[in-house]
Structure formats: structure tokens, C-alpha cells
Length: 302
Image (tube, rainbow, N blue to C red; front, side, top):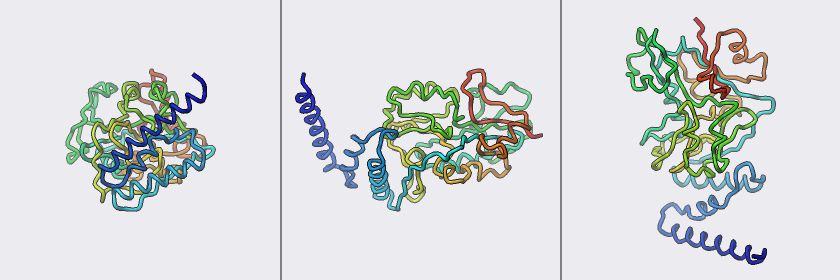
């Protein structure tokens, strides 16, 4: 096969797909046919040049604004130079109220129906072995907390330095950014769920159906690699509120915690609170024996 024949066949395939997409668009409301076609042919996020990235962000803003009836902003803020984000959680202060869970839901446009939560708060009985996360109680009554004889361990993405989830993705739709955040390009994810199987923390979630997010409850301030609305059939997870933290703000979960149990900062800054905790407190990481090197640290202040 010569180059000319190959190019002709590729052009034919692209034309056929474009025709099919245009035909499907006539049967869909919202006028999103062109956007869907552009999404089909867009490059991987890391391969986009500045011009294509700006076109993609504007297209997404237009599509989301039309769908939800409010002005959306989709940014692609880059990592802050000299920053490696880390998280600390004081188990002795956590009261299990789950406010972090619902603040995360609101901030990150997570599905309400069916419910998807990026944070899971586990309840353990004091004095019992508790490192078996899969056997913990996830469905306790939050109205009764804190309860005598119990303690609580919130779990979300551990933002591992050696993340097993990124190694198994067959299309490189997930990777570690220079500031340590593990991200997902939702437009590139094929929904194979290999990453979910590889994650030892149960931190990844799959949109089996169309995510149910009421228009009036959507957060229009988004990041391409973070909290923008996701489609059906992709995996999603915590991104340390990338749309906030890359602009000098705390993650929503840390900001809302009534007990001050959550800490966040730059691991490379010797004067940061997270560095102080690591150096002065007795900290540990979940499933350290797996050598995933989480950047999420647990400690007890009492």
C-alpha cells in the first residue's frame, strides 16, 4: 500500500464518521453535533498545541453552558512551579460528619443520581484491627457522630507517587502531573476500568449511566482535568480540587472541615504546614507495604 492510498482511505474513514455524526446530530436536541465531532477527533490533552487547547476549552464552555443554562468556565491552569501537593488528615480530630464528602460533591460536579462520592468515610471500632479498609463500615448514621468507642478514617485518592493506576491504562488517559496530582483526560478514557482494578484504595469511580447533576447545582468554575462535567462511560476521581489548588486555594474538603482535621500544602516548602506535620508528628500512609508512596498522610495529634 503506498502513502497516497493510505491517505485516501483515512480520509474516507474520517468523512464517514463525520457523516454519521452529522446524521446523529439531527436526532439530538441541544445542537451538540459539531461539538461531538470535534471531541471525537481532538488530540490527547498532553499533545494539544496552544491553539487546539483553546478551541477545545471554548467548545466545552459552549456545550456545558447550553446544557446547564449557565455560563461555564473551563480552564487548563498549569502546575505551579516548585510545588508538590501533599495532604494530611488528623484521625484523632475527624468526627465522621461527612461534610467533606458533600462539599466535594458540590465542588466537583459529582453525580447525585446515581450517587458518586470521591471521598468515603470509614468507621472503625476502637481497639479492633482497622487496616482492612474493605471490611470497614461505610454506612453508619452521620447524624449520631461522633460516637463513643469509634473513630473515622476518610479515604479518597492517595495521589500516589508510584501510582499503579497510571501504569495499566492502555491509552494513557491518566497520568501524574508535575505537582503530584493524578489526573484523567475524560475525552481520552475508554472506560476499560483497568485503573479501578489496579487502585488499592478504591478511589476511582465509573460513570455507568449518564451522571445526574441538576443544572441549578452545577459548579460552573471548572478545570479540564478536574471538575468539569463528565460523560457516561468514563472513570473519575479526586484531583485535590485542581481548579482551586492551582489558584492558591484549599481543596473544598479541607476548607469545610469543622474540626480542622484536614491539612494541605506544598511538600517542597520547608515552612509549609504539611511539612511540619510530617516532621513533627507520627504519620503513616495507607497500605505502605505496596510501595505506592501516597502523598496523603494520616496522623494522630493527641
